[in-house]
Length: 178
Image 1: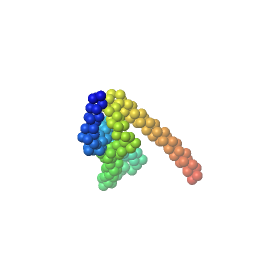
Image 2: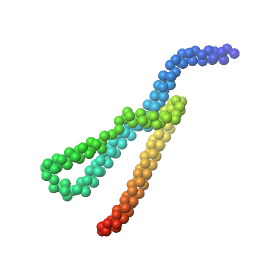
Image 3: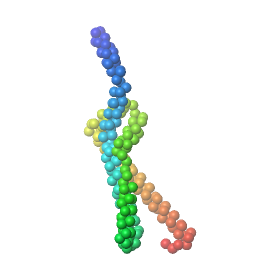
Image 4: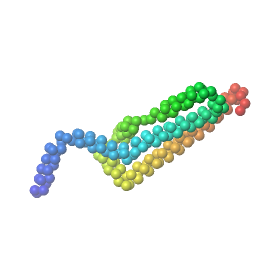
């Protein structure tokens, strides 16, 4: 019977030694788990990819403007050319203003951890450090990316078709030939 008594004594000592710092240890553990998960889910990389995608969209917008106004742009005076280039630069800077990686990480962490206990976060972080956990994260991110691309394509196609129908109806109403 000495073993159960020893175990109870060790537990009592552990509680006395650990209890005063328990709240900060739990908070640190939660923060450590979230930091590991933020890294595993590459939140900073997602911010960088979003900024790149925004710049690509801005450049497509510039190309649409150039194709729409190409003839007029070809005949700009030097002063107009300077103003056009300044407007283009302002547009790119405005479009480029991207999310802050720290704020994005905080927002991600808040959403991720909202309904998870400290233990669940700890276990998720442990899983993320394993090969199968990393594979699961990559698979999940890839599937989410594919789903977003599919939904965006479906949305775009639906809007484009609806806009064409709308324009046809407006032209017919106004008696404007196609």
